[in-house]
Amino acid sequence: MGAPTTFLLLRHGETALTPEKRFSGSGGSDPELSATGRRQAQAAAAAFAARGSASDIVCSPLRRCRQTADAVAERLGLAVTVDEGLRETDFGAWEGLTFAEVRERYADDLTAWLASPEAAPTGSGESFVAVGERVEAARLRLVAGHAGRTVLAVTHVTPIKTLVRLALGAPAQAMFRMELSPASASVVAYYADGNASVRLFNDTSYLD
Image (cartoon, rainbow, N blue to C red):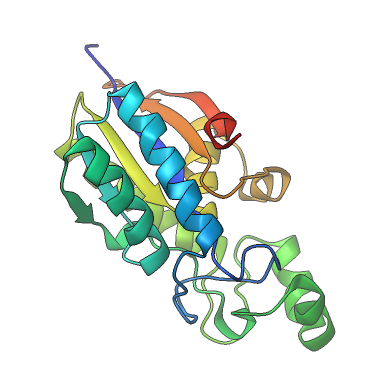
């Protein structure tokens, strides 16, 4: 089957919203990395430089991913390509709110969202089904354009979890059972026959 196309999936570093566990998608304030997030990005950059396997870097258009990707790109001497398909979910009216605040203000919508991948956050939000279709289209595009290569994709919680659960053949609800830390690395390999292999998930050992 030849060499697989391997995705090194790096979640961006922390922003000011991350420790407060606020919804932060593509429809919000587009926060930058915090001081902690910048340190995490540098640690990830050092780890990927030591690994030395990435041949291409792609990232979400959102600022926190661009900053994380730029830190790695500087160490690896590679250019960064932005892919709109890797952006985070649009959480609509929930952007910037905590889970508790959403439950207080939009209880029925939250219950529906937790129960069905077809339900979208209040307002202009995206459902997990819609995000899944967008991310899968990006995956197919990137695999076709980088066949047999190792691609470092700097993106967000939902796209990474989506790629992992699709590789595993798991339902969308499985994403609620995954923990993905800031600046963590996951690895999925895609083979020419259509099979996929999850090789790593939520590695943060280089942040210690």
